[in-house]
Image (cartoon, rainbow, N blue to C red; front, side):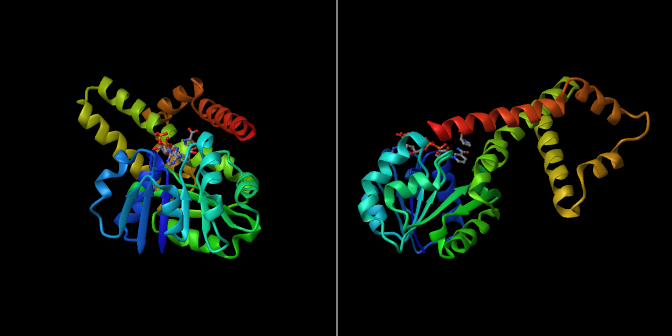
Length: 264
Ligand SMILES: NC(=O)C1=CN([C@@H]2O[C@H](COP(=O)(O)OP(=O)(O)OC[C@H]3O[C@@H](n4cnc5c(N)ncnc54)[C@H](OP(=O)(O)O)[C@@H]3O)[C@@H](O)[C@H]2O)C=CC1
Ligand SMILES: O=C(O)[C@@H]1CCC=N1
């Protein structure tokens, strides 16, 4: 697979790291205005770091555009005449719809919207994918790549905005919950480093329990909450402060914002 990543900032460099670590390519072009974030990859076999987007497009079959929504339009315009029907064009740009991409590079092209998260760098991304009707089975190719970098789900494009909030922004939401737990643990007497370890490993254990058992969170909560015990006391105090409500409101606020980005 000849892959190009155009835009190697936070997400593009995370994808590059995952792809390189898993040797998922026969050639990999990393193209950015400023290649500082990927300078460590220059000595990798079959990796080319460049500032020439057109060179990257011409040398590759699979193009992953990892650009900010405010930059992607111009970049697509500048490489459009070099994109052929054999290319598979993937975009991770939040709020940038397939119809917009089609209007720039043509509706006869294979276009896939990909919504990973930064855990892709350690091959633990939850990645959602949606294709245009010219996808021609290429979505399976995209799924094959991103399955090596975590877990994937093919969804209708209408749900990509919601997936962005839950999975991509979701990394930040979960980080804040872990940080708050760490702060609580320090207040209870742990050193910061120990507090961080307790919080992250417990978070990892909770997620693993759900993934491996397939059980509902409330079933797991029932197994922890001793009647009149400390767990239910803590849970109820959190809910009196609006824990679930705050999370749901945050998710909805994030969704409203991404829909504004989509319109702008
Ligand atoms: N960060 C995340 O967790 C996620 C992000 N996304 C989406 O992914 C996209 C990228 O996000 P993120 O990686 O955070 O953004 P970054 O700004 O970190 O990365 C974008 C990169 O593209 C570069 N760039 C800008 N213009 C050009 C150009 N003409 N040619 C080549 N490179 C260029 C930027 O350079 P410079 O900085 O010099 O402008 C920057 O290095 C966004 O659309 C975002 O919505 C989706 C899911 C998760
Ligand atoms: O914050 C953002 O807008 C982008 C999209 C999801 C993650 N980062």
